[in-house]
Every structure is written in C-alpha cells, then in structure tokens.
Image (tube, rainbow, N blue to C red; front, side, top):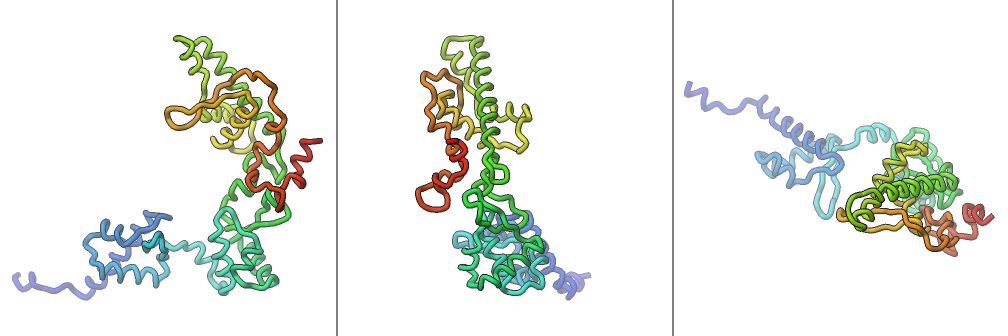
Length: 309
C-alpha cells in the first residue's frame, strides 16, 4: 500500500495533461470571442498554469492554427482563428492572401481598388484578376458608394456596408427617396401634434401641461414602426435625423432630458420655414464630404438639381 502511494505519474497521464491545458485555453479564448484573451486573463482564469506552461500551450495552439496573436495597445491578445476564412484561403497564393488581408482591414467602410493597388504593389491586370477570383469564391464583394456612384469599394462578403456608403434608409439603389422622407416628416410631426393636444388635458399647472407634450425619439420610433409605412428597418438614429429636420423647420423644439438624451415637442411656427432647411442636404449622409472640389459637390449633385427643378 505504501509503495503505491509513492508512484510517479504514468507516461499516459503526463501526455494527457498538456492536451487538457490546450483545451482549457482554447475554450477560454472561444468564450472571449472577438475580444480575445491576454496572458493576464489566462493567469486569472487558470491560476494553476505556470508562466512556462502558458507559453508552451499558446505556442502549440498557434502552431496548430487554432489561435491568432494580435497586438492590442501594447498587450498581446490571443483569439480563436476563423476556420471558415482558413478554409476559403486554403490553396490561395500569397498575392490573394495579401489582397484579402488589405480588404479585411478596411472593415465595413470598404476600400477603393486604387488604395488596394497602392498597398499591395500589384499590377492593375494582376489585381483585377485576384479581385474577380475572390468575388467568385464569395469572400469579398464590390459595393457602390452614394458619394461616388462610378467608384466601387471592396469589403468582406459577410459585412453589412456602412451607412456612409449606402446612404442609410434615405437611399434606394443610390437614389434619394425624397417622397419617403417627406412622409416620415409628416407622420413624426403628426405624432408630436397629437401628443401636444393630449397634454392639454393633463392635470397640474402650465408647466405640467407643457412637459406632458414632450416625447422621446424612441417613442416616435415606436409609432412609426407600428404604422408600417417603411419598407426598411428604421433605427432610432434615423428618426432623430427626421426630428432634427423638423427642428430646423421651426415646427418642433428640442430640449435635453434628465437621462442625457433629447425630448421633442410640436410648436407653432411664427414664421414660414426658410427654403434652405428643405434642401435634401438636411438628410444627406455625406454632407461633411461636400465641397467645391472633389467628386461630392453641389454642382454635380443630382438630388439638389431635382429639388431646384
């Protein structure tokens, strides 16, 4: 009995221990998702692993292609490798991997072919061939921008384009939906008018009646959503944009709420709204890029031309 107590771990047990450690680290990295884990996280979550063992396990998982290593603010972070991307890039040459990596870094705002060519140092014919190949594999896609309709930007196939590219809910196939915006303006204003009329029956003094007439953008959003007048899914920010145009029109006033947001209330305009606030520029997602020079300018703006005619 005493002899058995002094037995050393068997060879099979010593082989199983590193595998178990790898599984524990991999499970921890998987639960962290896109955030990843650092060495400090490993030390906190798996305290029985020594520094030497952690290095051994991490190196083994990186060699096996299970983990990717990133530098986040001077700290090394480990993330579970995207196996779907690995499978798609399997058999691809170095040029394809370089182009894919450049497009991946651009995120959902995309990148122009000129910038890809500059970063990859590839010839135009070779780059066009690689882009068509990656598009055929459904790894990337080309998206047209409302800021420059003749230019395409490339992004990963599974990403939703940023609203600065698509124009958000106010654009359909790069065409500004002026009628849709007008309808939303009318319905949002109607809701605030109804809220103001109901507030007249509120109990209390004039201040209570006035406060009862205010509504948040979320309340207006719920009203618009229940109406079902929009074919696209509108966000709270979309409704805020519409409400802001009503503020500029002088039909609605906006005040800060105690929660940190804004409240809106219909008011009687003393003067008719000036023409400038009815311009399509009021809801244009690329208004900050508009200037006298460049591809986004008032002279070539088709929406401004339509409005003027």
